Every structure is written in structure tokens, then in C-alpha cells.
Length: 268
Length: 296
Image (tube, each protein chain N blue to C red):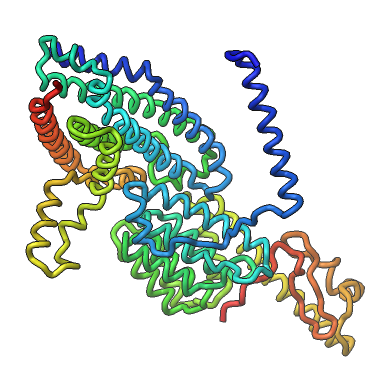
């Protein structure tokens, strides 16, 4: 556990050194500029659009971080040959993989937490500036705590994507890993189609294959509750819990597979 | 140039950018700037757009909503443009497919579509189609109310208006006054007092936003203008009865003691008098122009 913590903290420090947190500045500027411009363009829908924009930006920024840092977690160490000195120490390869994963998740969590604070600050400012005649028309208060549900689900999605990126990083080149991880992200939002393949294809084997892929590939679409929280629609706690359970089990499976591949890898 | 001097590089980059901008300006003046075709809609299928947007569909809906607003605003200012408001319905359809819960897109969109020319697209049929889509997806009483209003105000179809108000009133959580609307439609659909009652209700409701509030105020002023025009027509008829001819100017009615002064509409713009027919109307320069078609 101590080893995992050390590796995780090092990954976090390295990302800070690599100026990854600069994206927070970009996020803040984007939201502030948007909040200023949107009030002129949206016929009173600026709060709704800022909510949409903020959540989408959190997801997009997080996605790029998860993919582009995730794919380099292992391959970078191999490229720099620092893997030899690392593995010569009393570190088990599984600990190395899990430590790297936890480190990136920590980086993403810190990022998302700061972005959430900035997000609520902008929403609070807009609520303060809005005329009292606008507020009765809002579907939900500007600083609606339910938005945190969407943020939590974004974090879960990013955790799954980080695990996917790390998985590919253990055996593939960074470019290929990035492509495959983005592919998984896209498929993850489409794969409900795979479940209902019989509606378009008449072949039973193909339908079964599609069904198998549906369960095998990450299903990210249910983790997206942005629209529901923005429109103040109910998102049951049990649904969030099931999503969380699914994400953790899927991540555990990916980390196990990553550790297995990394264990068998020959660095001679 | 000695390497490593930041200000030298900074100056060089600035100079080169200034030259680049200069060249662009010269090219634009000589050959004209590339025109932006704002009437082009690449994606028409909301389903395809929703798939392509991955999990960013609500954000894409916001983009299309802003585009719909800009399209409406631009075309409203250009009454003679060919294909006026032609993209309004496709843009609203895309917006509401990408975000089926975007209540304002249905409700404002329906107003933009149903408003008579030149203020809107004069397509109450499309307004109803958009609202019916909302009924199919989220079934809110507000859409029933809006459909009833389009049937009432734009199509003067009081039976359908009453039916939609009643069906909306039957939904759980619907306000009590929707049933009142249905009753008003059935008893005195074409009555001007009924119109005034409905618009005053809109104005007084706490959830009415600024845009709709302005519309309601405008409608109430137009109804006042219609009342005033009735009085002015009576004055014109009286003048004709007394003198045997139509008045050519308002001054003649003032001189005859039928009016106190030159009449102005509720926006302060003088009314027009057609000396050939005796017809009274609001001026084309009045913000109240054109007046709504008088309910039958």
C-alpha cells in the first residue's frame, strides 16, 4: 500500500511539473468569457447553457488528460528506460500499475474539484447578476447541488477511460493507445446500439457477437446524467450507486488485465 | 541576431503578424472577403446529430438554439430576403431532438414560428408540429397550453383550442386556470375581452419571462388599439352622416367636435385615415403594426 501511495504521489507531482494544471486556467477563462457573451445571445437561457458548457468542458478536459497522460504512464517509463531502475527496487509490477493508475486518478480528481469550484463560482456570479424576473423561469437554481451528481458521474467516466488508457499503455505504443482509447470512449457512448442489433441484422451469430461486445466493452452512456441534472430531472440514488458499482468492477477488471500483461512483459 | 534574446523573437513575431494582417487586409479589399453562408445547415437529422455528439448532445443543442435565435433575429430584420425563416424549423427540430427537455426551445420556437409576418415565420402549422413533438417526448402541460394558444390566436380555431386547453388541464400538476381557458374558448372564443383576459393572465403569471411579458404587453396594447379604432370608425361614420362625405384629415373630425385632437395609438404614433375608404388603422411606422387579425 505504501509503495502504491509513493508511486501515485509521484505521478501527481509529475503532472504538476508538466504543467497539466494549466488547463484549469483555460477552463476558468472559457466559463467567464462564455458567461459574459451568452447573456446577449440566448434569450434568457444563459444559466442553462453555462451549466451545459461547464459540465461538457469538465468532461472534455478530463478526457484529454486521462487519455494523453494515461497512455504515457507505462510507455514513458519504458522509453526513458527508468523502468529498469524502478523494477530493480522492491516494487511488485502490480503495485506499479495500480500506483500509476491511482496517481492519474488523483490528478484528475484534483482537477475536477478545482473546476467544480470555478464552475459554481461562475454560476453564483450569474445568479447574483440575474434580474429577479428571470429566476422564476429557471428549471433549477443556478447553484443547484444536484449538479454534483453529474460531476461525480464524469469522474467515474474518466476513471474508466484512465483504466482503458493504462491497459493499452502496458503493451502498445502511445499513438496506438491513444487511438484505441478514444475508440473505446466513442464506442462506450454508442454501445446501446449493439444490444439491439437484432433490429437491423437478421443473423443470430452476429446478434450474439454484438450482444457479447455490448457487455464486454465499457458502457459509458448511462454514466452521462448531465442533461437530467441541468433540467432538474430526478436521478435516483440507486441508479448512481449501480453506475458506481459497474464502473468500479469494470476498472478492477481492466487493472487486473493490465497487471497481468505487465507481469508477463519482458524488458530485457 | 544573437540567439536567446526573447525580446528579439517577440519583436520579430509581432512584426511578422502585423505584415500577415496587412496582407490579409489588402487581399480582402482587392478580391473581397470570403462570404460566410449563414443559411447553410450541414446536419438536418437530429438523430444523426445526437449520435455524432456522443455525450455532448445538450451542448450541441445549445449551439443550435443560439443559431436558431440568430437566424430568427437576422431574418426578422430583413423582410425581403429570399427564403426568409426557412431554417427556423429545421434548427428548432435539431435543437429539440438533441435535447428533448429543452422547454424554452419548444415554447419560444413555437412563438417564432407562429408569429404572423413580418414579426415571425407565419407558420402556425409548424409551431403546432414542434409543440406536438414536445408532447410526445415529455408531455408537459405547458405544450398543451401553447398549442391551444396557437389554435386560438393564430388559427382562430376555438374548438381545437378548447380541446388542447382541456387536455392540458387534465394532466397532473397542470394549473386550474387551463380549464378556465377551455371554458372561455367554448363560450366566447372570438371575443376581444376573451383575448384580453388570456393575455392578462400571461402577463400576471410569475413564471412568465421577460420576452413573453413584452409580447403580452404588446398584445394588450394592440387590443386597446382595436378598441380605439372602433371608436374612431364610429366618429368617421358620424362625420359622413352629418356631411355626406368622408373626412380627408383628422382635423376635420376635431373641427366637427367629434374628436378632441389628432388621435394617436397606445404607442404614441398617429392613426392613419384612408380618405378614399374611411378606413382607420395603425400606422406602418407604429410598433403595434400589424394589428392581429380580428377573431371571427
